[in-house]
Length: 485
Image: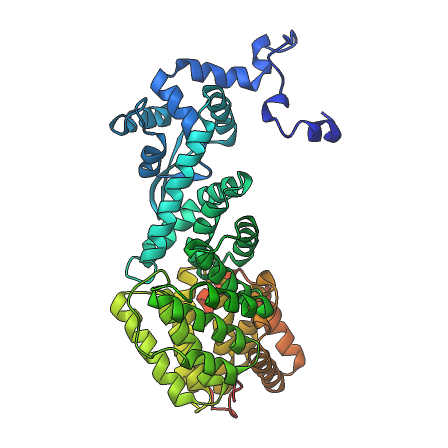
């Protein structure tokens, strides 16, 4: 079939291999010319309960677990206690695939079989009902993950949320398509950690912008989405938007009884100002809230984010002892909670605080710990920033070749994110100083070779190599580059 003709039929995968309206006498046997007919044979061999389950399962995208299947499929026609039987039978008959993953046992349906089920679901008149059930289930799951994120189950929720990502995206797309702005705000806001902490800032910003434009009514759902959009914008070097949203958010939560919202507002404004190169103003915004941690609320992560920003501002203003004190307090609280993501930011800040007093080996150890923690959650921004400070520490220790290679690795990650170092002038200056010092120690040719090696290496292999300390430390060199006041 010519490519132009094939392109016309891509919207209907069943139209490509044939149709069921006319018989192709050249086919052997003649009824094999239609994909829909072939799948229809399997459909006819299913029991009524299996056919109903097949149709309803078509609302899932990617993989799903048994709990989700039961929540979405079950009603008076197919009681929850009966769902496992057709599910297992559809696996036996190869309509479903059983997939063991890090997030537990899951199921997957091939797109062709899903489209066939969707055809029958539409015929049953249940598509709208099932799409809403699917949306409600994944909204509840996103809210549960949000509530538990800063805690000992963080890695479990990370694996589950990443596995559920296609379904979360499908639920959010359904909200936006159906112009259900309130649900879109709730879902996009609850998934702040997926956009910000797990490496999907571009997707999050796109969804949040659409949701905020769709529903402009003030309320808790819109406020959470504004906050989420604000700190996602920081990652994408859009500090003007983050500052604007910080002001809108502060007004929106002014009358809320939730104390954590005050910390969330201070963090958002302070972080945007710090990244924008205005540390003195950032310090004022951060110091406007109490030093004690608030009770848990809708913004449970805000205190941790605020403490990390406070330590960063101390580094920018040359207050390295204060920065280390705040970073260690942050790490200690994360340790008590069994938390990983913010603990890695704490280790990153400990590395920054140790650089300028001349404790480069200590800074390198903290930077490696931070990089390892960020890799566990695929925090792309954290995975990009940690190599920068590790390279600074290695240059200070005289490991110029390792520093150049790690700078290349970090640049590979930044290239996928957009603006390197989020456009923060202090971070850009520190990275430039690190490169210049490494070039002086190696020579430009050797530097470029090592940098290109890091830039071109497999990301996971490069991070694994970066986490391995150099074998033989050469003599200390001059003062390390790094963000200073």
